Length: 117
Image 1 (tube, rainbow, N blue to C red):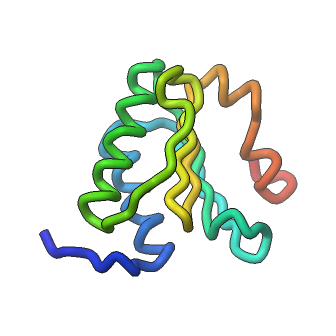
Image 2 (cartoon, rainbow, N blue to C red):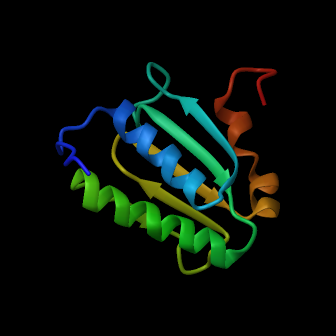
């Protein structure tokens, strides 16, 4: 596997994140373009895991892959509870939810254009 430079674009980071989530069977993956809308990052990704255990596993694998392949250290919050894990990679913010927690917060509705969610 080719080494990816640590100054990878947010698009390259996003592509790897989406692949990682798919590989780990994350469900209902939604990608939100934040460029020009927010200073928190370029993209936001929201997805679900079927259980607290899967949410934690998806999150752990993603953080490990980004560190190994991009040299990126991500900030992670909520992994111990496994209901909602936030992974901040700098350019891309990833939210991994249990389905009922995701439904309760409806994060996508705050960020997607009206009628898109």
